Structure formats: structure tokens, C-alpha cells
Image 1 (cartoon, helix red, strand yellow):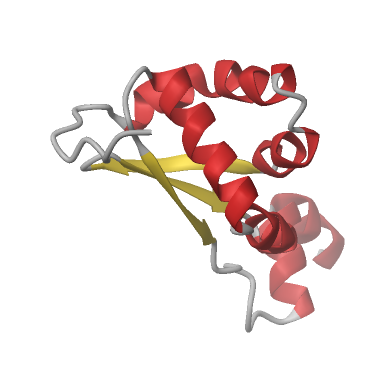
Image 2: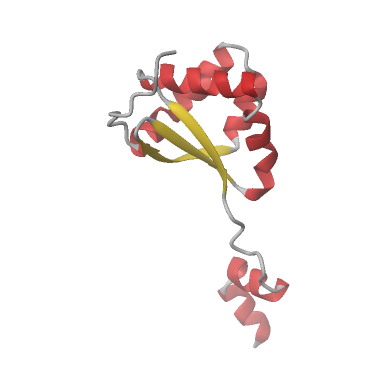
Length: 120
């Protein structure tokens, strides 16, 4: 693996288009833990050769698993191979938007108008 290509012009849209191919590379290398963990994430940004993969809060353990050095190396390799360029990855966990909301607010946001009818 060479150094990260800081002049990379790869966009997050391009990564999203090739995401299934990248997952397939994991499978073909028999890296099932990496594959299963990446499956729960999604590419959210690409800048200066660094691809950010985000996980919903319920999949935070996938981020932890992928940060283990040997798994992290595999992810960097398969993403670089899939995109045809030397890249690095960064993992984030999305903040749960429902934190701090009452159960009633969560239900209202999830079910919206159907709940309104129940109130009437």
C-alpha cells in the first residue's frame, strides 16, 4: 500500500456506486468479519483520499471491530482496490437523532399522521 493520494478526486457518489463491488472483494478474500461489519455502514464522505464510513448507533460495535489494526488494514486495502487508488478510511457513528425525545415524540415522528387519527 502506498501513501494516501491526497489529490484524490474520488467523490462519495463514486464510492457509493462501487460499494457492492468493495463488499464483494471482502467476500472473495474470505474476510467475513470485515464484510459483515462494513455491511452495516455506509460511505458518507470522501475528501483528500479519506473515505468516511458511518454507522448507525445500534451498529457502533461494527466500528469498534473494524478499528482493530488487522481489520482496519483489510478495509483500507479493499477500498483502495475497489476504487483503483490508494485510499484510507475513517469510521464514525451517527448521533441518534431521537436522543432526548419523549417516547410520544418518537412515535409521532415515526408514525406521523397515523397517530393523529388515534388522537381524534
